[in-house]
Length: 186
Image (tube, rainbow, N blue to C red; front, side):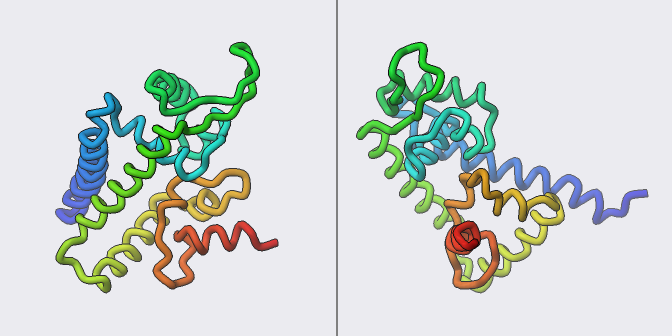
């Protein structure tokens, strides 16, 4: 029989994470509305801002997204002159995707917007509390995903989210500087 605490956490955690995800997506969609885009497009623009010149499969892996979703989004971004590709002909199967100048400007804007918006979540919370919360959430994530280390340190793909972390000066593997150092070491 479930305890009261179990019932609370069984409903709170899914609701909490779903709500945080929805709020972040909604804010990104509001920011992109003047461009006729949504958060689904924004994540691809930011990914290409971080690593331009990716194949469709590489971009899908980078974002941990389905390739059919990637095809749909790339088509919409191409129609808005935010990306181009280097294919030799229309029938070419192998090509890389790049941001146009307009796409790069939007990508840099989105990166700044995302940083400012995320920072606003922590208004009134001390750095010590933020680090404690981060460490608790990392422990929770490791319990949820026992394969997290392999995902973060995969030598064959660099998950997009590893590029968005900040090095807080500790040796935890979930910060981009520590992540990249481990990938570069022999």
